[in-house]
Amino acid sequence: MIFLILFSQLMAQDVVIQSPSTPNIAYEKRLVSDPKLQSYIQYLQNQTNKNKLTLENTFKRAQFEFLQGSLEKAADLFKQLTEMQHQARWSLTEQKIIHYAFLRLAQLRPTDTKSWLRKAFLFNPKVKVDENLFPPPLVDHYKSLQKSTPVNVWTLPKRVENFDQVFINGRPLPKGVTFFRYRPGRVRMDLLSNIYQPVTLVTDLKDLESTKVTLHPLATGTCQAPNFHFKASQKFRLLNEDCLSGKAAVTGTQTLSKWQAATVKPEQGPSILKNKWFWVGVSVIATGLTLHSLNQKESQGGTAPAPPSGPREFSNN
Image (tube, rainbow, N blue to C red):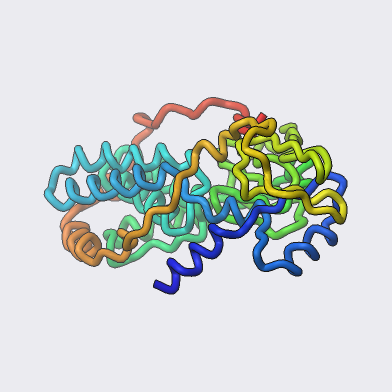
């Protein structure tokens, strides 16, 4: 009940867009002085991606097939989950589902065990493997691969400093950094700002430094005539220097952003990760499965097709 009250209060707050000419200190001061206002980044963080429901339903189906002993059907469904890794800026709970799916595939597709394990810790190296859910040989193999895979230093693309928050596979980077440490591979990068339209890059880290990031203001104009460059409702307002505009007119110049189009109202419900039925059943079955690939030489074939090369950028223009 308390959560619902707080959530309704957040939804009732007007959203303040920062004009490119407005200093950060003036923008932050305005937000602090009026609790009825929220930043654009806060607004984005309160949205729920429409892919969440698909992720959870696919996970439930995969777990059901796995518990029923339909291992090939389960593997196909777990693979669908891993293919969703770059479709959204997932929360930690959702990241754990995808990470878990990678590990299950490493168990169910023994010819590609090493590949699936590598993809698991590339997706989120901070998620710990629950040793009660997977056979000890698989857990040991995972830890060994993770330890032996080097961590490189990568430089962020130019213009990233214009954004307030940077996420790699859903995990935030410290504010103001120009480089970060990560294992080589393909990742999703999300750039959020209170001034510019959000940008999403899906790219191999080796191509990151040469990637160009475009800057498109969320809004321009004056307090008397604000111009919002996305589908703005009447709850959006523009802060131009020290002047806060009235609420956005529904008939203003508005271009639907891909970020906004991919969001729906949050759906309330218990987390499936807290459902003990799933995990107890899985724990029993996991102990009965064996990984033949860990007792044999690693296969040289059967690797998954390589993802498309080069970065893909999604912005609001």
